[in-house]
Image (cartoon, rainbow, N blue to C red):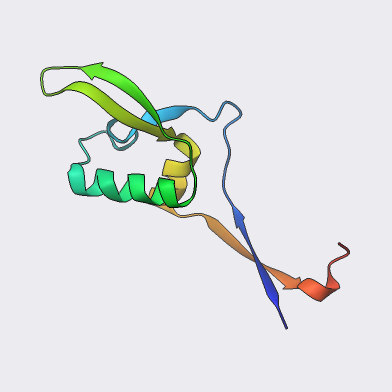
Length: 89
């Protein structure tokens, strides 16, 4: 019996982008930043950049869809669906 796994991820209507700093409320650090970037790349998530300038850092930072970051840090809802042979499509 085959089961389908459906990932459900909350979506924003505007699917806004934010940096890890904006999402976490703190600096992420290079190791976490690389892990998130690698995960986004593996899943073919579009990554944008934005210029920032503050007392601690000036330069470009990567930004990700907020929905991707929510799933990455808080997990997604996974639902088991009935046997795929019983589905009408």
